[in-house]
Length: 126
Length: 412
Image (cartoon, each protein chain N blue to C red):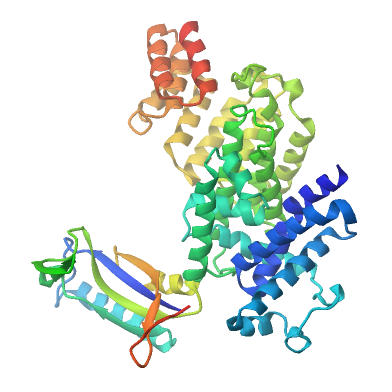
């Protein structure tokens, strides 16, 4: 069963900058976690995102696209990165989520509903 | 009548165990629930004519198990699950005799029931849903019984349960016993305590005879949890707490449904057997662990339950117990109760001094203002007392509490 671990963090709190000791510690913590989940065989994919100042949102309303700057919603906590993992059940996914070194952020755990098969056709995963 | 009693017993006492076993066996709570319900319906239809089986739980398990196999057979995609759950069936094709149903070990029942209890109270389900699922799957209550007990429309309750089952399936919430059991057990105890409180506070509001007693259901399910979690002092504490309150439940309201305060309750009508049972539980767990919140609340309740007259109540000890409760489970309401105990032990001025720090947090809590009114009245400040009772009256929603406050306003 695949779950997306959606990492959200408060962008208004500046993170540690390169050169500061906290930056190295943070990079190490993320590296350690990623290696651990990779070696366990649970990791499908993952990425960290640029801040929402770089975001552009395409809104689709009644078939009409409009392109606006910024993220989809102006909230304090913003989508910062993700891990897609494949584990036995929700409890196993929650155990990994607890270990994500997100500092003061949140990790939303969402089960995947459909995935494309080899030919690109959507398939229910359950 | 014997059949009706046996059927009630089957639904309440046995169906939760049978459901837990089937859920574990097939890895599917929804399927297990549907099949147990079908089997209960069959019992209602056939027992009056055929008589009560020698082993009602075994009968229920067999009928529900067969029903599950039938259902799985009907869907080709379920072949794998049938093979896993009942390998003996893959060639035989049909289950011919009752003896072929696998024998169930007693120890297995306990484990499966604990898994089901933890699943019903899983942190990914909201608390209302946890309560509904626990009563439905573990307690064997029907959806309409739960809806009536909580004074909710039945479709609301039914939808809550359907949505929960869908979430359990889609998010694959497992029937498992986690390594770190303690936060999950806390969630179970919280749900059982909520059920108990709902029954305790609602008592007397509804004259509906068919309404199940949430107090009795909570006591029963806490007893089940206790048997599943031997040695857990907090389960014991919760059970003792519930028994102490249960023992004086019938004296809390008078014939007109009006509230009778603790000091005015007829202590000769308190249930001595329940108090003795609770005392026995507390004696066994005392000092075994650093006391948790339920054990401390039970100790406080025991001071009241074992005082022969209101004057015999050891308020200084109760105030000390509230200090310890504040350390392990700090909350403004506990702080309010502490202030009330201090007012009884050291006089109303000492209590009022503590209340001053709680006004902001409890401004909209009627019992804060009611307690303040009582202390002011005892301190001789009639105007202040009346003003507090009036504020409390405006915030109270329970009719019995409203009438009680009306009398206090008129009395000072």
